[in-house]
Image (tube, rainbow, N blue to C red):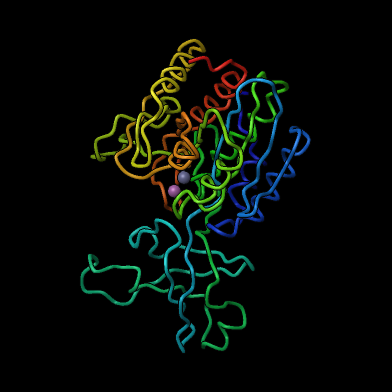
Amino acid sequence: MDKLDVKTLDTLLSTFGPSGNEEAVREFIESEIKDHVDELHVDTLGNLIAHKKGNGKRIMLAGHMDQIGLMVTYIDKEGFLRFTNIGGISPAVSLSQRVIFKNGTIGVIGSEHLENIKDLKLDKMFIDIGANSREEAERIISIGDVCGYFNAPVIDDQKVVSPSLDDRIGCYIMMETIKNIKESPNDLYFVFTVQEELGLRGAKTSAYQVEPDIGIAYDVTMTGDTPKARTMALKMGEGFAIKAKDNSMISHPGLKNYLVQEAKKQKVNYQIEVLEFGGTDSGAIHLSKEGVPSSVLSIPTRYIHSTCEMVSNKDVLGAINYSTKLLMTDFNF
Ligand code: CO
Ligand code: ZN
């Protein structure tokens, strides 16, 4: 594959799916992959489990469908909405951004007047949907409603810029890999998980059910390549990353070495990732039952958890082509 499927990716990125509200994303993914898998199953929490049967090792691939969001906690008498965070929402990144609710209502995030911008906290902020009173607001929004950042995706020849790349880009890589693999010696379970941003919840229950021999998550990771960035060895555009560690896991050394050897064999660009905070679905998978050898394939991403997360097309295409070949190998390590 040498070009992104712009239409599919654009739809995937634009679909509403804050944690706990992944139905629309799940339906879209289902419609895209249903002709390319042997079985599709939605579990109790809402994870989509796509099975491509094979006789070899049982491998669980995981990418999370959910995105970070905001939940309405209170509507004041002027019609402004107070909110709490669903996952890692930063006040600075949220100010003056647009949000969208499930029913299509668009809001803008504003703040109380502050003498010092350092005092900007989520509890000083509100969502403005243009209503003039509580009654007017309540006609379209209720306490407990959830919204996500709203910003049209940009997909050009170099890069993708969009909210929700965390982790729709992981879902996209899995979808394309599913379409590419005609037959695999391995028993492949592609799991599109829910509620990762709230603590890897969907991965936990789906791994318990799938009982994999090996687990690999697809997710975004940070970079150290912007001006005076926090020190980190990853650069956008230099290849997907094979994880050594994050705060939720240490990659299984045998599996990690196997992933590296396969990358070398395939002569593809790859980097090694050490992420000093955050976690991914593999954090839950590797602790399932008596333990599962696990690792992560990451896409170096700038401005994670913002309205304009950015990835390089090269890294995404590299990950798709690599995964396609990788999953046909015997995973002897
Ligand atoms: Co995230
Ligand atoms: Zn993620």
